[in-house]
Image 1 (cartoon, rainbow, N blue to C red):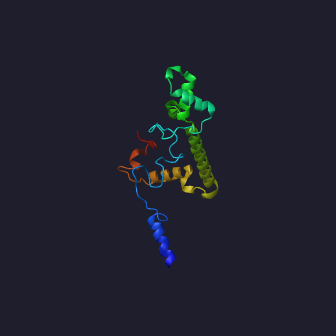
Image 2 (spheres, rainbow, N blue to C red):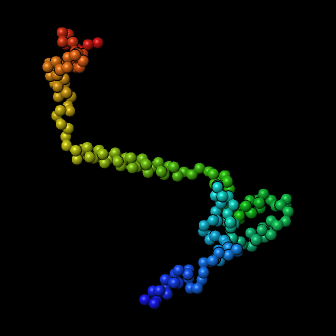
Image 3 (tube, one colour):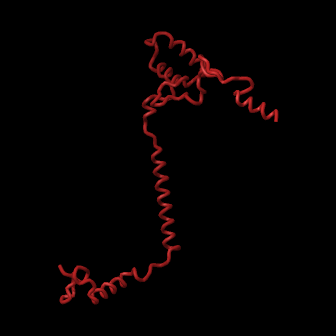
Length: 171
């Protein structure tokens, strides 16, 4: 019983004697930065990441960073582009370019439409019973002739549109 109570006290306190107090210099657990994997890439709606894209620099890149502190008129275009690539992963043009993902999505959509059509065809051929005889054209023609012979609904219906003397439909 005692270990269970002690464990619940430890969990309630937020660790072994560590209080979850907020401080003015950041979070209670240390460093004010977010972890590297959460916000290292620029996005369209938030183009300035908290950390640069490249954090580990080689000797050439460190020399370029030192040269950056001087006058920017002395830097060549290639050096400016290299400095930009150290800070950011993509330019706005690269972020806004169209992707070809729609082709994959449409491929999957057409694949599933085709698969569904094959399933429906298979059901019609192998699962559903044959059509009843009352749905054939021959049966429908006989039924229409029988209704005309019986003069069904002669005032406003089918028989009112049939000319019995000429044996054809009225125009």
